[in-house]
Image (cartoon, rainbow, N blue to C red):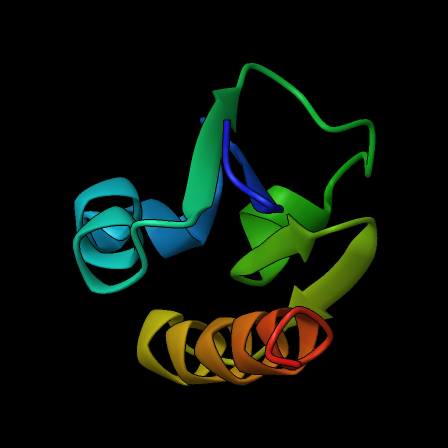
Length: 82
């Protein structure tokens, strides 16, 4: 298990990208968990989003969401950099 956890809903628009492979190959210390439902009813059909260590990250496009997820991961990893 990683020190940063990214949770993604199976029905999410962000799955147009292979988010699990992309994130886990770039960040070995991150675990991507694919869930059937994250209980944000309707949001997965409207906007690409993920939950990074309990913080919701969303955008208008999958690519923009991926960029924001990367930024949030970097922010979370900075805590452990010292």
